[in-house]
Length: 257
Image 1: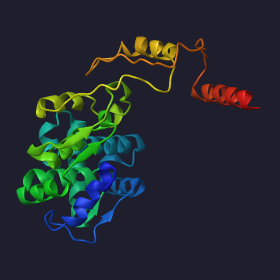
Image 2: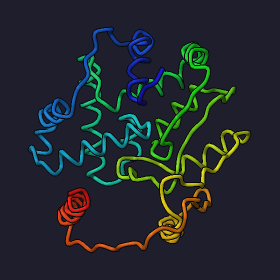
Image 3: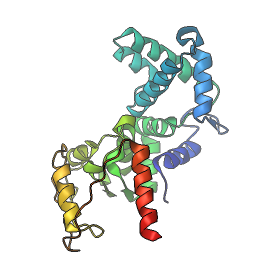
Image 4: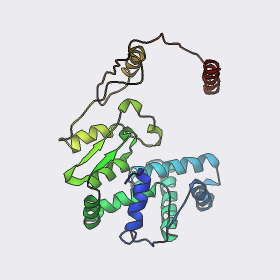
């Protein structure tokens, strides 16, 4: 079986809807459905303020990714804004449950909570998924890490591929430090560093090594190549991302014409 985290989560929900106290004919909200519902539920407090509603959606998503339910969110709230958002989260959660509806983050949250709390279901899925391979592991968030941990169990027959220097999704909850947690939770795991690059020249990798040396590292690494030192690097300055894209496309067209 090859899938994304969310596809796997949806499969678990479809098979275990009864254990989740759901009906089999549940629906899945997209971004626009979620936005419309939250506007309706929070109009009294947020007055359809686009910025506040967007912040609320992001906050709820972060809470779900961190396995925080509405009750816990209210306990953690310190500012008046956080308390208001936690209250809105509770309204949203209650409405979704009553209507047998899920949002995108629920596809990870619900299976993770179910496997945490239901030993029978957990053992069933651990027996079903005998081996697991996870790619781009540096982009996993808290709930995804916990889901993997629950699925592999004590047998720990799994492989992950990741690079802490390629983590670009921290803004949506990705935690490259999950690579560190792996070493703590599964001390028998073997670390294999893939440092040889088969695509770039040594000159490019030398520049890359200088740049990534400034990053906070989970694992120290030094990239190398056996393709030769290569041509001199060309530095192109651009006013903004649009200008940069135009320059790149222009040079590509020039080299192929």
